[in-house]
Image 1 (cartoon, rainbow, N blue to C red):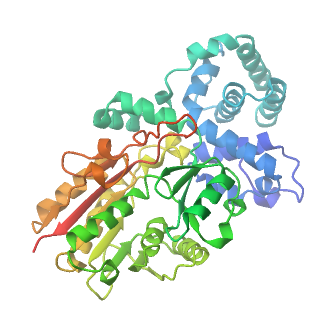
Image 2 (tube, rainbow, N blue to C red):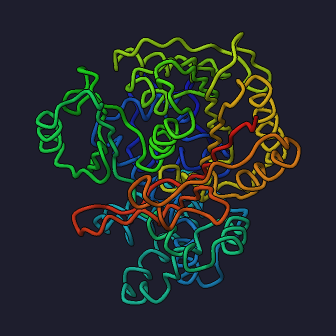
Image 3 (cartoon, rainbow, N blue to C red):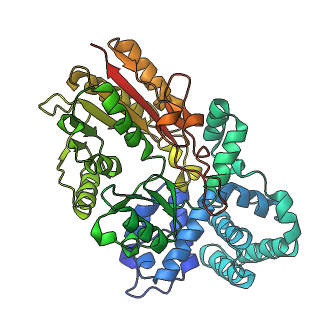
Length: 460
């Protein structure tokens, strides 16, 4: 199979954006490479101008979201269907179908490029087949709407079955419908910013304040181009991602009675990229941050430097880290399958079931166990995952509570934060589904990432 090969790429690539998109798609879809890594290592992609780079991203991300629907449609217009083993032919038709049906690209440009790609990677016979299938599609455009099944058909089978059993098919359809479009950009504004400054920033972003100090806007360029970027008065964090720490800040005075919050010691395990740490530091709290991954820790340092927060991050394994003191609050944003981030990470649509789920569960259990060992008396643990799989959330806490009889749940209540009433479980956990946050305005994109949150206390 032909792949990107930097050593054979000329100093000035003659490949157009669609051909580069095809080659990237082959690596991402068939070899399960990470899109960001492929993009960063692609000399051809990095020679493109800003507009073409954005077009390649759009093609790849839409193809991830719509791959199964696209395949059903182009196979309908092929007399005998395209065999799965014909990887290039399927890829060419997927990318062409996505451009025609969902991106509404001019048909002649799509057709000409697809035919040329089929000649390059196949044969004249295959190029004629591609030409025939796409022309047949264009002649019968009115049939597309009947062939486009419910968006949930795009989910991997293992996720569809799992989510349907856990949350019901209606919720799954709503989650996937939201995930068919790129997510909005959520910006958390520092509490130290005045109302006047925040209002000015909102106008400059053309955004809306969807939750306290959370501005939602549409933006898909480099974040350093956003207003006030270098002033360090805001950071990017999903609307649902910032809810746990706000709940934690609400709970602390109720738990640590007659104690100044600034006198408490916080330990943030699995800290990078630093959104939750930024929330705590924005409240002038004493926090020690830990991250196992060195490259992620560098990103954390960069983010904290821009935000003018003084915080060191220790590169260590949260499963056995000993800070040398007894923290009063341990925050665990645990490594997980991250299925709740499907709108932001559309590669989840094309990934097989994770092979390392058992390993992730073991890590989650170990981090919880370690937190219980190093926690100060009367301390609290907040456990968070961005997975919709209950085996990584509710089941982990249930197991922990059986093994650690001196811990119990601190329940969440609807009046503690806006829009969370439907997210609170009977046990008092928070289970935010990507379709839960509805802001009731045609001007605001609904939804968020999905999260599980639990708060545990050490009983004395």
